[in-house]
Image (spheres, rainbow, N blue to C red):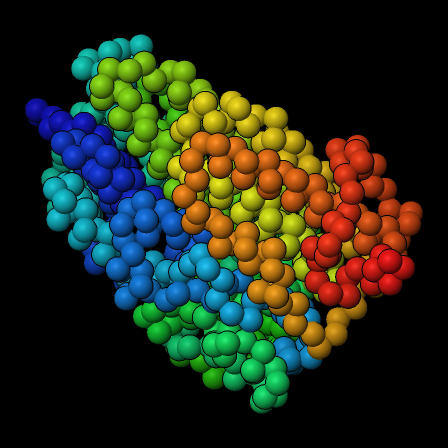
Length: 547
């Protein structure tokens, strides 16, 4: 049988594959693109997928890079940031530490009903002339010789559609098949990591309104708007966090992510077991779910969900994107961020190849950057779940993690510098230093939590009232030229050094035996901020009382 041909074939038409197809079409309008998707469209709303909460990079990718702002603003929900309640064992949320912002910060993010979004994307790419074939089952594929020239190289894909077998050839084959990992399995690229965590999640066909969990007017009025339900709400405890994410379809997504050594999967791997688990660890949520059993829409349990990959891009003109490559953790919702980053690199490689530019050097560098981002972010999770229920140290970790994310990775993405090799080379020292500092801070925070008093007061730690923090978020959308971008990265490096110095000083003031050697070596003679504390009021009690 004669095979049809396409310039790019994408195996998988979920979020990663459809957004890649759209980005390729925008950059390269004449490209012939085929997307093969196993599921029939339209898919169900409140789809059977995790990854509903977007953060700044992913939201900016969808909104401004891909131009999907109208859909996000009219068909999805604007997210009221992340919010954390240290409510383990409590039937209340108004008498514990609440960490979050009292108002929307400047740079938006969204809660995504994946079914609504992927149905829209499927229709949208087709309207742009992309061949989107849903209900297609890939039965075989062969990778071409990497040494062949572009016009000679032909990956081959066989798939069935409506009972008929079809064949495709293409110089570029992209794996966006999610955890099926088609290319990863064929080439034995799977790479485990040290983050041993499990997850369960399900959707309920009703709103879970956390704002109604208290009748305390002062607590309700702490947020403007009084709409905590629009946040990604985290109910935190030792070794786990539970999420509450609202969806535009009217459903609510609920999940538990837990250290496998502290909360085994068998204790929560069905809806009834999860409900029993909530009764013990988060009884207020259990009470909200008791009368909603008949509204259960799905249930998934996933063991050891985090993993790496030995290779993600190849000069043989194949690439992996989304969960077909690496996956970190649902905490901080980095999934769409890494889709944005990998799709940007893949699009640039295809564009360079199309004009005959040798891609091997770029493949090597882009893969190095991408995997270094993955490994650096992995340290935020590995062995860190033990502190998730700590009302004293965990809020500090969240501020540190946000600052590292907004101050480094977000700057590279928002300023469209991911593929700017000149800027990356000029800022190598700063980027290497900030990664090393983060690597040192994570174990320090973990050790601090082991000795902290874990005071849990009826108090809101309001991120919006940290003026420097709110400005860091606002500044993500600044349009910086080369000189200003260089200055910004150096400013962020200095900010991270000051924040690290204050965190260490604050911890040592209460616990002088903590070992801060690794952080101190990197900080050198970095001084504490002189004008004001970078931490929440009360954390600096020892230092500023003496000042």
